[in-house]
Length: 145
Image (cartoon, rainbow, N blue to C red):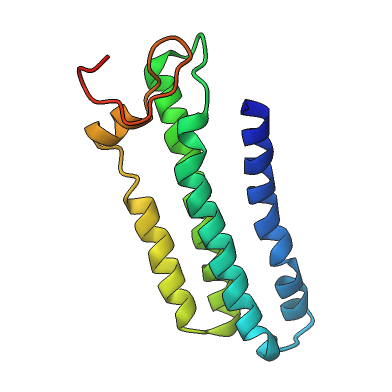
């Protein structure tokens, strides 16, 4: 399972820069990507939704490391979730820089809200913390272990 998760993370982080390579090349040539506003909007929405969904689904599935300790594993899970939300937020930001489409600001705000909701509160920390030896905490509460 861990290798499959690593592959999904790798793909998610690789797709965004490649998706905007065309935008960068177009701008470098001085061309106006005017006809691509709708495409960039939907690309930003899709990439954002995919990464935010991965930020919620993948971290709890990361297995506990034998030597890492509970807090190290929990922090790693948060880092993965934060990185995916950050990547999601960069997509509409870059598209907005090119198109100035105000709808992309809404997508950016939603991505930043998803990141803000990943604040490491006690409850959320416990929920992402592993239970037992190598277990996965799904909804674990303080004192339930």
